[in-house]
Amino acid sequence: MAAGAIPMAYQTTPSSPDWLNKGDNAWQMTSATLVGLQSMPGLVILYGSIVKKKWAINSAFMALYAFAAVWICWVVWAYNMSFGDRLLPFWGKARPALGQSFLVAQSELTATAIRYHNGSAEAPMLKPLYPVATMVYFQCMFASITVIILAGSLLGRMNIKAWMAFVPLWITFSYTVCAFSLWGGGFLFQWGVIDYSGGYVIHLSSGIAGLTAAYWVGPRSASDRERFPPNNILLVLAGAGLLWLGWTGFNGGDPYSANIDSSMAVLNTHICASTSLLVWTILDVFFFGKPSVIGAVQGMITGLVCITPGAGLVQGWAAIVMGILSGSIPWYTMMVLHKKWSFMQRIDDTLGVFHTHAVAGFLGGATTGLFAEPILCSLFLSIPDSKGAFYGGPGGSQFGKQIAGALFVTAWNIVITSIICVIISLILPLRIADQELLIGDDAVHGEEAYAIWAEGELNDMTHHNESTHSGVSVGVTQNV
Image (tube, rainbow, N blue to C red; front, side, top):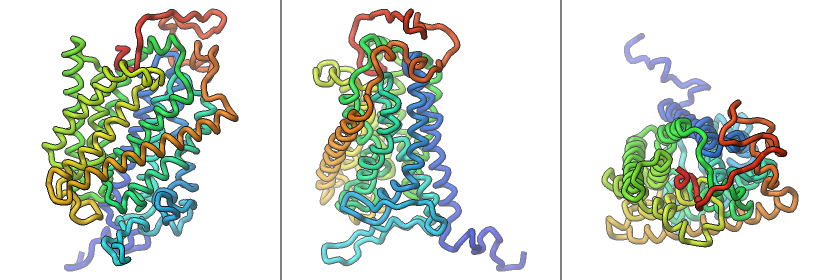
């Protein structure tokens, strides 16, 4: 190569325009794939193994269907409703993300430009150094996992046909609103509410919507509520492992660049998750005398969820504090408060998604309002001088903004999810028929997960006889 010549890999070509940063593009697609693996096969495996044997197929299929359905909704209309031009302060304009000229251009989140009240520019719009196609892929994986998490509240009794209608409606009228409001340049983004990687958009939304949908769908059969043992705990750990390591891309990809803030986000993610898992396990040992594997998985999840709103914005010591809180407060709400609160007892949240995602997501958003470090904020946020209340000055108002943002997300999901469930119930039953609930997968899908008999359950309705068990169960942890 002649002296001073530009290497071929760095020369501008039609497929490598001068605005393209190949490192950022490679990392963003890798992050998207890691997030995708959390859902498919991660949550497909976890859901299929953490439920009672007779619901393994149905639970895994709910996740599989949602993953595919969201893809089509996303590219046909939902991406631009979340990240496109502004239609309303909380919603983008619906249009397809399918055309070649749109997808190969540099990614631009047009509504994210920040302006002062006089109209002058305060911060430019976000323009990642890779094509729109990469951004569509990355954000689709987040939309998919949100509705799959929501499904965890409905396992073991929702009519699969009603679920097939629910997914596109919820993505369209709930997810896109929260995504645009907080990420796409909507009113919460402009106001300065912080949600680094989805503590509100994904976890608070799915937890609140899951609990709301569980109210409208109704409970599992009485015998399933009383006894709902996982059918394969080792596979639960396999799914949980994909979920945990996949969170590297979940939080590490949200600076939209392979930069130092991305590294900080990844490190904090694993610090918080590890701390939370250990705290949850210690509480199980202290109060119940033995560690629970399912409990450890729950603690892992609450730690991952809690750090998500501030993963790249807090220091390592704050990640440990957040892990301690996420391993103890959701443990208390799930293991103690839920059993004492009659209203929560009436709602059958199968996997306790309200506790592991809504409570932990709100906790993470609130603590981000306390611990967001000014220098780290300057590496990521468009709003100048952003910082948490712990750092004084105007940071005190950040905590209030975080609470207000959480209230909007909560209210929107309660109302919209209720409307969607009521509309679907006018056309399809939301809950599987009682006779089919006794049988499970064989009645709903004509398939079974294992070619063996287990737990005395028969696939023939005329011979099926569920045994009864004493005690009250709420979510998976209590069953182990």
